[in-house]
Image (cartoon, rainbow, N blue to C red; front, side, top):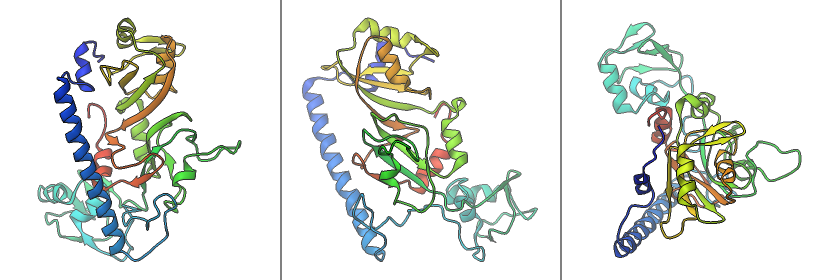
Length: 316
């Protein structure tokens, strides 16, 4: 449902005194700096712990050990049942163990109650009657897209594409999930997991996206209310889930939460109201953020992030 109350502002800019805001900003800055240092210290340690490999053109360091985070083991390998379920993307190992103990898993038609029961990729494993498979060489890459790159795998006109940035990250053929136009920056996911990509782009799942919009002039209150009520465009009514001033002192800075996947919907919505979008940055997509990723850089998703994405959808 659309949210029309001005309380929506609190989602992006809670009302606080100037002193409180300054102190919060200082604390967040210190926290971000500390997290950033810890993140890169961890990456350096991981790099030292692994023998040198192919150097990443973007980061200058060896490719991270979870580059292909869900590679399928050799067919001769056996593994505990709960680990097999985790590698199939069902859930974490701990949750998988609980599912097995509840008698919800069958191996080759026989119920198994022991999470440590050894299985191989050749075995038929069913959870609640549904056959599961080990993910094979599935790759998940998160890019903080810069401007002037188009979201396509190839461009006949020879323009820069997002694959120019992440192309050397993996030997697998990955595709962007959804699109960001050439002048839009921010969170962009790549994968060769077709099932997940379809889920994240299907309108019925109402995947949430948050954008930081910079306008050419302050957004007037009357236009603010009109946008919340819905704006009629050439392809139908366009509405947002949340609209707020990102900076109460600068009303050209707007936060927009939306689930529509229509082409250039945010730009068209503001343009229909007589505003020019000077800058558009996607800060959140399906719960994923740009945290610890500089503009034009990328990273691989963790196993937990992949599991979360597989369960992400309407209302989450």
